[in-house]
Amino acid sequence: MSISKTYVEDKTKKRRPFGVWALTLYALLYGGIYHLISTDTWNVLQGNTSMYRKDEVPIFYVYAFLNISIIIVSMLTWGGMEIGRKSFLVFIALYFLGDGIDAFGWGTWIPDSDDVSGWIWYITDFVFPVVCIWYFNKPSTKEFFMKEWSFLLERTSSALFDVRLSLR
Figure 1 (cartoon, helix red, strand yellow):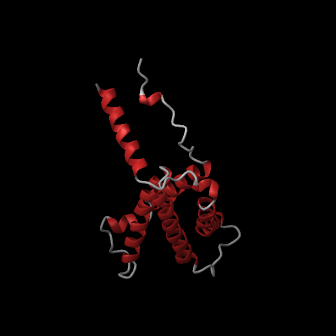
Figure 2: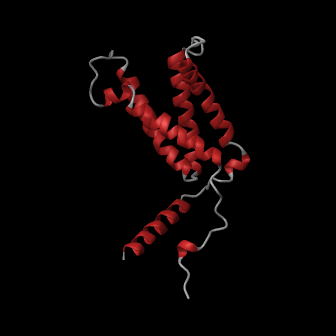
């Protein structure tokens, strides 16, 4: 009698904490995908630079690099990679704090009291990186992350093997 590998549970694997789930998903969707395709960055990447000053165009390329980097490191962080966690914190801090500083002038401009979307943007740009740094550096959260690349390779190769078996 043989037991399929897919039904054997690995007791050493840690469950993904809810905070990792929520923060990486928010960063992926809001900091990565949404800001990449719905802002002026998308226009510049498509070659529509005529409506921007010359000194603004390189800034949009930096934003595009940060958006794409956030997409990549969010997926690595979601998978439990230690390098993903560290890179995630760096890129989140650079992007959100940089965006907040760019938009709000180092905190010298504060939205009007009736500007709800301005306040949400203001709070997100300054609070989200701080929450991420605090949460991802908690000892209980750090336990989820693996320090080796071999874990990802083993998981990927076993998934490919399972797919090949199911196709037969």
